Length: 138
Image (cartoon, rainbow, N blue to C red; front, side, top):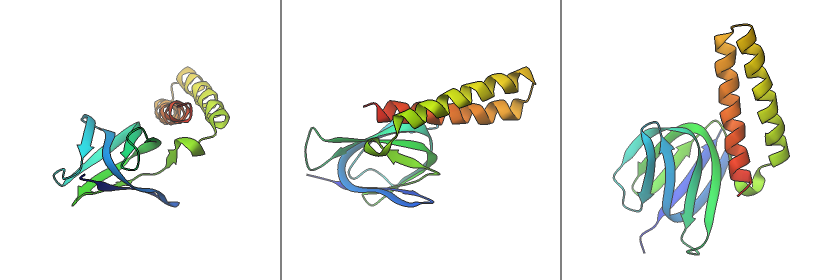
């Protein structure tokens, strides 16, 4: 069976390193399914839930909350470089819920004062919190 290596790297170091037969990511152009022997490619990523089907068990799927970044596919090695990424098992959902509430309040306050740049920052924080909640609740 053809396989590829999947690595996720953040400023805190290597967050994920396993062999997989399929991954699903979300680029700026939409969702992309990747199998072994995929052509070499680089693409920017959205904040999304990354699905990784590992080779050790057909039913084994790893979910990773990826907060943007860059995807590189080269010679059956998929590398994602992101500001942050968390595996499903490492996410503190209650903390993510608090971040969601905080971001929603920041959006409302920034809108009241017509601070567009603050609204945009808070919207990014909200997307990240929702992504973490979705992945952590799987």
